[in-house]
Length: 236
Ligand SMILES: Nc1ncnc2c1ncn2[C@@H]1O[C@H](COP(=O)(O)OP(=O)(O)OP(=O)(O)O)[C@@H](O)[C@H]1O
Ligand SMILES: [Mg+2]
Image: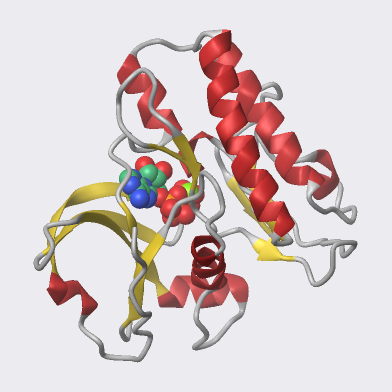
């Protein structure tokens, strides 16, 4: 998919180029809408992020969100099995991130819709390999995703052999050097790595831990470590 130029100046009415069709999901910072580009008929997903909420959490002001910067880099670098950015704009209240539409929705929606959960070992191997390839390419760019979980993996369609891609770079960050470490406590309960919970310095390994937790979930229909408020976000 061709990525168009990024129109990041205030007031550009990006949404008027699209017909809004339905709500795809709602998350921590806003909502994701299925829309169709009027000129090309291309269906896309538009993630609208509430600026006030974002700036309170990340203590940034007026900046292009890290999520957009990273998606732009991931798209330009042709990372395997990662969500592709199409366009980005902002107005007074929201950031609008336009990405490719994934009709299989999240891996969570997919397994429920398929009605076969847990999945077979063969199928889990395919999905985990695709996500692992995506994580490998992200780590080559020194990007740590920090929130690998069912809701952040999107599926190409609802068929039994649909392919998976990594989405939601809202918790992701880029290391300054390959040996750099992080300390900010961020992730989702149930799949968050122990070094993050313990407040220890951490790095790429946290994504591998979360991938292991996700694999356990696909194989046994439950996360390996049961916690209260299992899907609650941690951001401290
Ligand atoms: N490109 C897309 N195609 C299809 N569905 C999507 C797409 N992007 C997001 N969704 C749906 O919207 C949901 C929320 O998207 P996303 O994870 O990016 O938002 P979020 O606000 O960061 O969510 P959370 O805070 O819950 O992690 C996804 O789980 C998925 O169901
Ligand atoms: Mg999400």
